[in-house]
Length: 267
Ligand SMILES: [Ca+2]
Ligand SMILES: [Ca+2]
Image 1 (cartoon, rainbow, N blue to C red):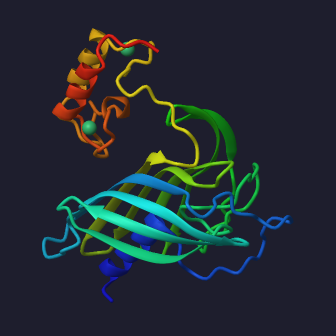
Image 2 (image 1 turned 60 degrees about the vertical axis):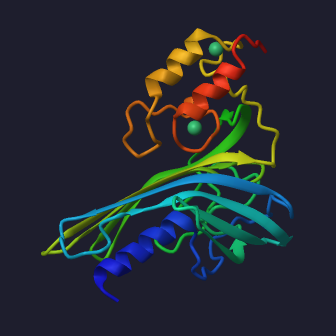
């Protein structure tokens, strides 16, 4: 495997889920438990970007993942059987069934972790940094933060910042950066993942009230218009997630039409 390929594999593995077999050394004294159950699902927006200074390297492209859904199939102890379904921007999709260990860094970690509790990782001693209460899809939720962490591995540098819903242990947002520097070229990878929807809690976003003043009015139309055309790409300055009413990762005519349909409504 070329070094560039090895880098991409590690980066995507970090971005998706650590599938490595990690011994439960240093795990919390209390046995971690899953906070999800069969039938739970989460839907995520996923953005991957790679750039390289090597003109011959095919890894210089964007991974055209439109969104990803995770369905929990069964739970046994700290093992969660789940199906990933990745929808690509060209309309195709691929599904993978596998098992997640909630003791290990990934999309689903243990429920109700507290500050200082470990989340097993093959390259570092990652632990919950802080717990905050914040708006998650319109509902106040406790969220566990891990990061920013960074580590060097061979010629690679990795930086990441992840947040999970504390009660369920599901990922709500992740940011990853990695680079590979050799004497010949540099590869830089960025990924960002955030939750769009779930059935684990009842999301309470009033979709068309973008400025959250409990009324759908002209200010919401203006706010959407200002973000019109933006995509949730990594550095989209005008992007605002509230303006993406239909949660498809873009602010477009469909969002404006939905706001217009609800014009005048109040909470
Ligand atoms: Ca409003
Ligand atoms: Ca949209």
